[in-house]
Length: 78
Image (cartoon, rainbow, N blue to C red; front, side, top):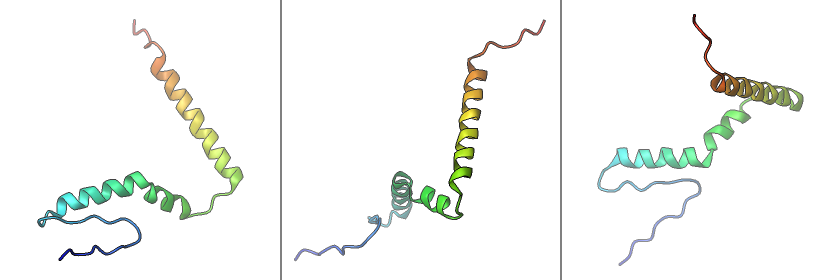
């Protein structure tokens, strides 16, 4: 007789042969790939659209400055 698996909503991982650590790693990987934690962190506090644009603009400036620093030649020390 075949056993029917329960259908559940959300993510689930089957623990086989008592290998809990392996199942936990698989679950963490699924959660990371789905982006669920990132979405929860973003929804913890409301950010006005104007402030959101300002934050994104500042982050882009930082990325650009970092890129320029990495591509530039080191200063002469003599």
